[in-house]
Image (cartoon, one colour):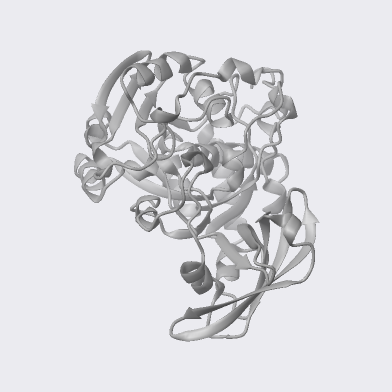
Length: 406
């Protein structure tokens, strides 16, 4: 790796984004969104349904198969005050699947809306699920960083916490849309291939894919596989410090099948990533492999990719060598899936190891996602964003997308 990007000034990654350029709603037909194609400095405009024509036979496209959960829960106190409990990540049990399967009780790390009105006491709400009335209780526990541990309990062991979220929860659309969640968002704010519940924000580059586009990719001979990164609310966390050294990246949880890692190895360690969440997962894999090489007895928890690890830990491993270290580790421990987490900061001077092409939407000014894009196109992000602004592209989660080939 080159020098650390810690002294980058976030003001250098600003651009004018009028509110009317932020897409408040998706297009009626997902794959009719605009596609900006950046190919080694040349830019052209196309339609997303044409994506297969820009990819090569036998290229490997990696999707993030996470599914957005209905993470906002609302309670009303006896005083009339409304309290919002926004579930961020499972606390007990810590595993997503186990937590969703709990009956009677579980706990989550949450953000609390109107927290000043809920200092103590148990919040209660009656709700009907599967034809039965249950009472859901929420009790406020310890504060952990900027989150609060909330213990949920309910009086029916035939009802899971997943059932409660599906019926009682509200889908959390991005705050910059400046509107309430609507019924249609439950469908439009999910990718058509979403499977694994756990995100509180969609991997939005994937929102453009339709079964028809996936079929065209298949017919062309493009290979496809999936990883899981559960997108946290921290993805919207603005960089408030002048230098990015003072910005704490959020932690996100990843799961990657051994078969997928082997698939990437068979493609020479080079992939097309759909969305920045897939990018963060895939690039984290390289640094996880380096950690295993340096410490073969490491635990999955210790594999967590620290924010500045890519710049602080030097390695000459190739992508395939590093990925093979992970496969060997999983074999030694009789595991089929790698479960760990990442806090990776990808910013200019970062050298990409696995991702060779990227499909991504247009991101907020002064965001870590814009830093990630800039690192990928070797600093040429302004020409991309100026083109998008000049050619009436729609921005952010429900907006248009780009295919970046540096």
